[in-house]
Length: 145
Image 1: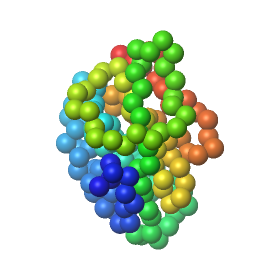
Image 2: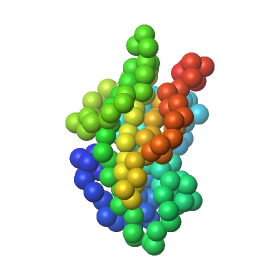
Image 3: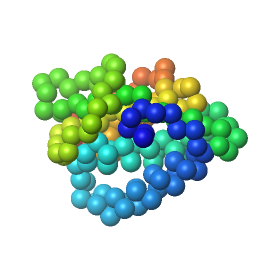
Image 4: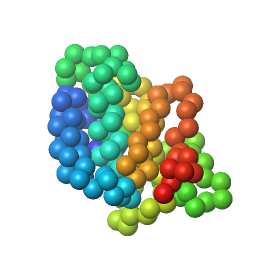
C-alpha cells in the first residue's frame, strides 16, 4: 500500500511499529554495510522519518493520530555514472527491481502533513532534507565503499 503512493491516515505510532520491527530485523546486518534493495532502503527511510517526525524536526507536532504520510516519489541513481547527481523530480513508483546493486543510491520523497521530505539511502546511511533546504543527499566519495 505504501509503495503504491497511497495516503496512510493512521497514527504515527502505526508507522513507528512497522518500521521499528523491520528495522530491528535488518539491524544485525548493518556492521557488514550491506547494499539494500528498494524495500530495505524504504525501511531505513521510514525509520528515520518517523523518529525525526516524533521529535518535531520535520513538521509541527500534531495530536496523536493526526499525521498523514504518503510516498510520492522514488528514483535510484547509480554512483558509477560519470557525474552522479540527485534527481530533480522523483516520480517512479513502479514495481521494485529484485536485484540489489551496491553502487546505487535510493531516493524517496514523502509528503508528511503536507510538507515534502526528500530522503536518500545508500547502504545503511540515511540522509534527509525538508522542502526548501539544500544540503547534499548523495554520499561523499569516501562513504561509497
